[in-house]
Image (tube, rainbow, N blue to C red):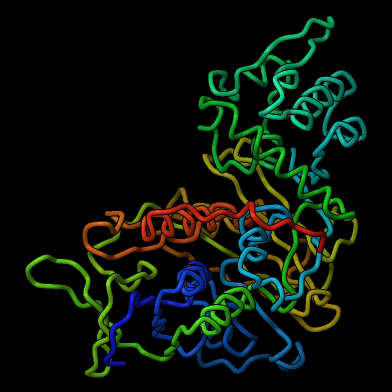
Length: 450
């Protein structure tokens, strides 16, 4: 361990493993350490025995659920957008070759306590029971505009109104709210477009330029087009724990060194400059040009910006109202629950090799807004039907107070409540740019269908 490295990375969560892989591919000498004896950090996947040890210590794991090795519970459950940032990163690095994926069966949104299939294009809009007849026509016009919009083709930068008059829309000047008004969309339609398609977590996007929202809806539609399942998402067989291990394997192929079970790993600083110079453990010090890690390794250099409450549930039946789907995402927009932020339901099953045959896993997550987080997730739990087992945990969301360019500590943000990876990978790509001074080009390789 007493060696010189370009980077020491602390924690084997997905973000840290992803960065380890990217930096190793760039030719950097990387040492990767974790206080735990397993990969994944906060975003680990636990088997049945580990789950019971964490949430019900002292109790033996039950025998009615079969072999404990057949279970994999994601502590931070998320799906992958089929044409999104994580898939592009997997293909860019070749890590997709180490993993197997399965398309998610369905994407739903809750309205007035019922679940509805999320319409993502003009044909879906006409068939959706979310909207009345006239609203379907208006939504169809909006989806056609989004599908045809091409930055390099000015003839696509507008749409005809209900009277046949063409209007030009400058998406850098027009806000999302104003664009929705141009198409005459009702609040409920705006709600599912903004939260279930563009995947915004609150309403602040409405008063910002519309281009990011339009791009997000296009990404959803493009991802949906890659599969024939009615969902834009994919999920790895055997659970998300396969992802950090895949990127760790990539780093090892390029010369990265791994050390697990290092509970005393401590960042060392230059007493004069205050800059990180390496990491010490068990009397040895690995020197490095900079240190990367999750917030738990950097006391005093992070702040809490909120909390996320998550419920992990074992079911004996698929989630009701979703067509007996083996895998599903349900988004509960904030207005539907009277909250300030959205709630998310994530469902998967034995078809993904994450639980015993005939069983299903469901997760409910949201941002904590009150002193009673266990009660806040009740609207999501009510969608699950009968629950065999339920485990609830609350996690702090920590973020760095500085960007790392001065003190050499590049710290990832905590995981949010969303059940998709877009915000997660954006954080990684921003960190990569701060560390290397360049942006990662994810457009150089063509994505084929899974």
